[in-house]
Length: 216
Image (cartoon, rainbow, N blue to C red; front, side, top):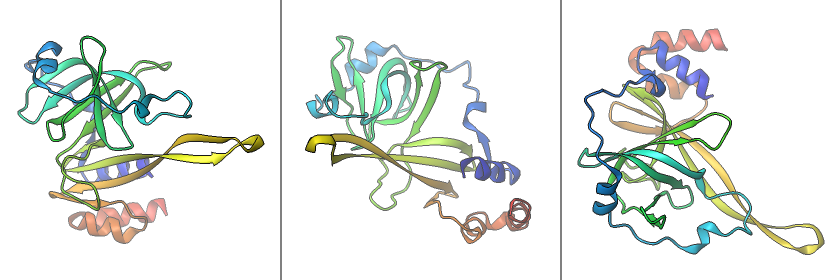
């Protein structure tokens, strides 16, 4: 779904891929020490790091180095962060490696690079979008594509309890992903079917219909 929608939005001239964006060389990155001094976070619950629970409540699963943009547009680099997908909060490490939770509404964008795998994986998180359902302006989405139209991914994790062998009870974090399209200052949850696309991209109706016919 993501790849076909991306192709359609590029065809209509609405988006460019996020990875294609170039950060201006004039951008000034403030040191992590300033961020850790200004952000007065709170200690998280111990439940988020219980080793007996399978899976992880976080995205990514391990700490990732991040570039952080605050609401006041100050930019910091070298912060260890991850997104709590159970309650959509941002966790970070202090200089003493103490885990903290950032206050709601203070962070605008985050670019995290997870280097634990065979190749680095980049996650771009953004907030500030209109309210929809239970999601507010403080909700963080993973921004998959960017431009006049944006494709957003919202990851929600829940703790599932089930019976294992010999009657033992086990717990595991399970993930569910929802996709949203943000265009013309409006956000809508992705729906299957051409009616949704024709409504969202009404001014490109002919191109959309042509693409739908080609891709069946």
